[in-house]
Image (cartoon, rainbow, N blue to C red):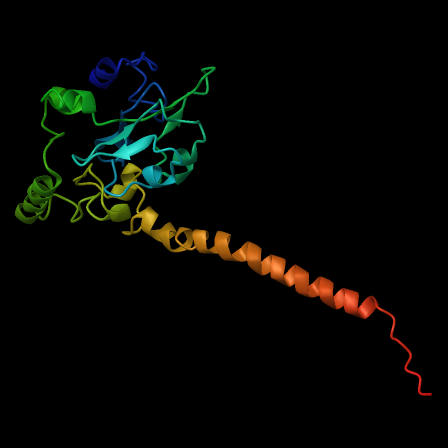
Length: 240
């Protein structure tokens, strides 16, 4: 609710049904708390943009409509967007959503309440959390807090901070006492930032575009010259 109020988003799901039948994020819902049951207890997990350290969506955007700020948030600039949706395909967490119901659709995603941060406020979700489950601060310091908790309570927490290394690291970090797989978290993403995986190929594109056309033209000219030579009739040599 606080997220919707802070970002001026309309209500999409009724409050009574969201816990029993959680749905996905959308252009109107930028964050969602989902309920997971494993037979012994119920666990709530919040999902939203992970604000990757080296975001694939920013790398994939052709017009720089997505930008990674030095403070951490990945922000979206609607005035630059051309609606290609490459960011949706690039995101390993499937976060960016498209406004399919609008004649001039835009991409929507969590912006880490950048407008509030500029005013010295906390993100809306962290500000209203009554239990302290959401904490806001510098990534390095939060990692220290998470690892200290694991060290001091080895039998309570899973010995892994989700987001520390996944896809090169994310600004959202998770600590849990339930295996992340049971909470719907992807564990097959690897530890390399996606832009690094594509850089080897993309860095060669300018050379390919520069050298390939002359090579093809040279090959064509060589082939044509051989065809002409093969098609010319042999001249008969006469001796007087």
